Image (tube, rainbow, N blue to C red; front, side, top):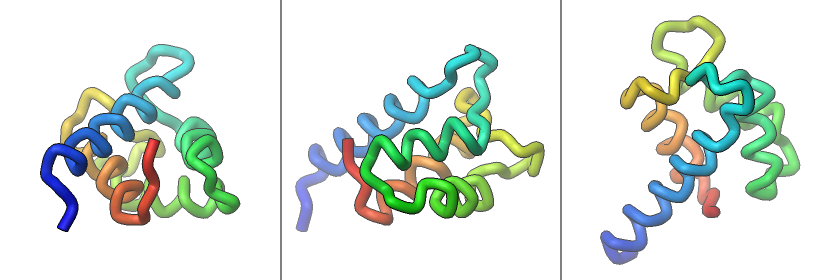
Length: 87
């Protein structure tokens, strides 16, 4: 079983990685920004991962993940974490 501290640190690192991709500072991540994170994390299928993550995290279906909305950001982080992505 993975220690809780490692679990929390890994998720916090993913959270920071996603937040850092908000290049225009609008507080939202586009599909392309999410795709870039997955590519940076080693995904060979960044477009697919971004689509799936967006489907899971974009709770209001506006085409963006609001990084200031805890539910949306956590949905994105949880999706990446459950698939084994680590920073």
